[in-house]
Image (cartoon, rainbow, N blue to C red; front, side):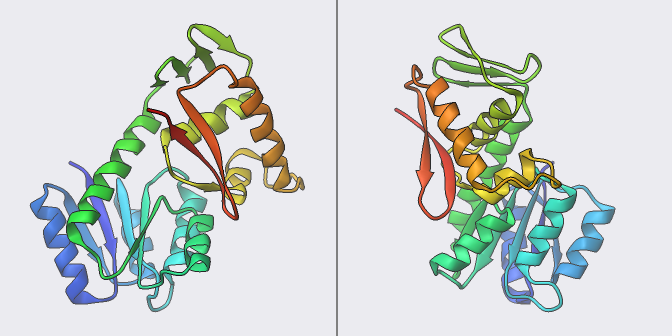
Length: 224
């Protein structure tokens, strides 16, 4: 069964979210601040974290950053009353997968939970297919209509990451943190160089595009 951790200091909202998700068939644990979340995540394994931002002790941004130091792959949704661009930018830069503005529509939350869990399942698989484009993680090879694409190991990993979460924007900092050694002093503009090379190698592929999200980073958009 899918297990979800809900981190929200508003007890009434926390209870409503947990009850709703349990009715949808999920196993749900509740906590009310980041410290409690760390404790539960140390003792249990979760498939998804849903967290508020403004909380006592450890806020949602710090919680996400700390989770990402331990687990780069667990899906995270941030909930907040903040709808401004800078707050969203900080959220995505900290490593979240989605951003939901309060007041929370529970039906929309359910749709987003299902979409993120579906993407996470794709990311865990060994093979990814988008039309005529195929990536095989066991071979660490990619193909366009059966013709091999000459990706470097890092280029392959970047493309696989973007395609595993279509329409999700990854900041340059996120990509640097995941695919470059922390001791590497390269500028985040290095990511731009890699994306340019990747686009050149994907010129024959019409099934998806790697799109620049100005002020944030990059995302994969599937065509058709």
